[in-house]
Length: 429
Image (cartoon, rainbow, N blue to C red; front, side, top):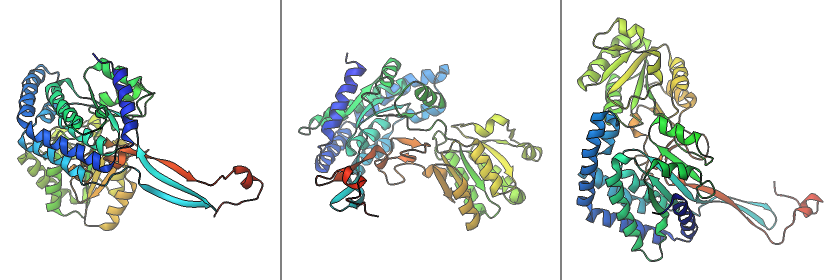
């Protein structure tokens, strides 16, 4: 059996070869992947059926959460979207070797800032087997090598999708198939985390516990988010129909997603007009509601929120609601308890909207739009490798641009620093 060390070493070599790939060859590889995924849809769905059967036992035993089980399922629609995502990436601009900035720093000397691949990226994810296709697609387009580790609950689906991708890549002449790799066990992950000489970036996608474990056990830079504690603030100038539509979509469209709303903050001045209508709408959609002490005293069929609820990612049809005095109080609450993921204000007041969007310290800040829009595909990135709440390199949904870094290219003509130090030559201002 191939060791993780050998896999990482081959991935590093493949990433160097990938630097020479033209856009034409990369797009040809992507179309080959899409074609072979299409031809093997039944095999993928059958493998996923096996995983679901095994996962049901894990769910019943309490070793797998309901939200993870929900993310595991592939159906015709998800498979179609997965394949279309590969095709859509073909049409995206190649993110590599783009001149980001250029300047003549002195006579005869030009400095350019040029995009380039990161190199080798380790991606650790749970449940969602379509992630393999998404990340492989972005890696190919951005000339990066990846080492993928999926959850054991999706092992059969992961294996078949991975084998299809590798087969498709091997059909493209001189394509370095070791750009795409798959490992399987926790021991493999531990081994990967020690390989900072070969792996340039780790992206964990999963639970808070997973992300914290990764960050605590590697010297490799980590890009990701531990929690998706998203908020909606209902301003006193909010339109009630927008409130109902956005809150329900943000919670119910896909409750397991990290961009699902977990806490709704409501301005005290519109409690009488808005709160009960919102409560009824959430109840109609089978959402369990937890509320602060004041709202609990005037409500029925709700639970009283505890201190822990304001910093909890539920990942299910459960939401907490709290009254705030103003947009400033909402901002303070979000910056205190939020995870820096995605937060929204619902308002018709532009001044309040700008204040909220300027001072809420999150990767995504929205006005009058569902938090569920925080997604690489919906941003037009083709897909995403994850969502980052970091403040370095990449933030928010990480697509093609987030998988590149840059280098500086200096074009000279026998220039030496001593000429500038002695005043013979001068830098341009």
